[in-house]
Length: 298
Image 1: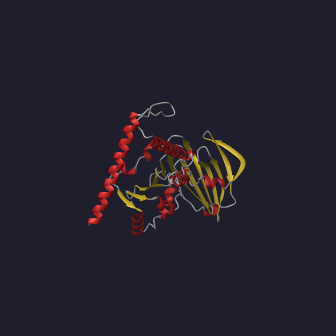
Image 2 (image 1 turned 90 degrees about the vertical axis):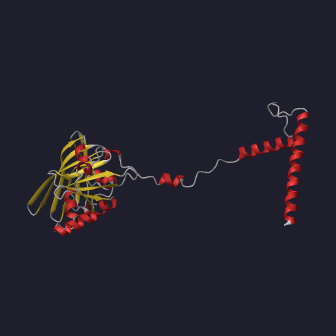
Image 3 (image 1 turned 60 degrees about the vertical axis):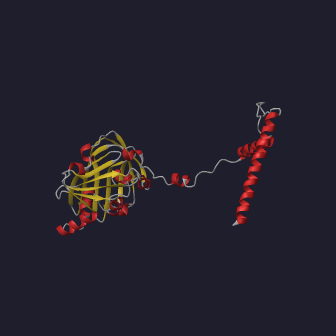
């Protein structure tokens, strides 16, 4: 213990001695002729050795390279979510007519389709059932939504994964294009046939699969007409009305317009469908979306 105290006293004494020596040196320098820096300004009172050391440190600092980019910055830029194409957010309202022909029988139904930059509605024209969808502001390629059932007075919440699993659409861009995104359009063959409808040009795209033809507008990100043929079944979907203004009433959040309706999720919807003998709920969703089997045409 006594040895430790002796060392501490020795170190303290040495420190005080160094401080005193520096003080005396500074006073002596102050009484001498004033030192000058490179510009001629007086730097009196400073030890020339200290000035030289300071100059060396400044020069060394100037030679140091710029600090490296923070780790993770590049990764965050590269992983930024892709935005849907601008045309996929263009507001509009359309009436979509689907005609299915099989074995000499024909069934036709009309649906209302409207979208804005952030929301989308697709449902039966008679108001029996419909989808209300909204784009994810954080992950713009994704979306979620509600299956609106006025008969049962239900609002069935669907996550993005639910909607993809139900086969509604893989992305917002696909939902906004009535089943078509730019990746799928790029796989089709472009023909020389063109036509103008509703003041916009549509180009004919063809495919050797079940999807025979598509009249497509890149400006609207919308198919004017599609034709599917498979196993003796022919389905034609075409837009019969189109205006470039959205239907704000249909795009409004249904939960605000129907506060007394029951909020359920996909599992509840399937349970209700089994309990009422309406199948597994998949056909119900497919009817609302106007979906038909087109896997062979992809």
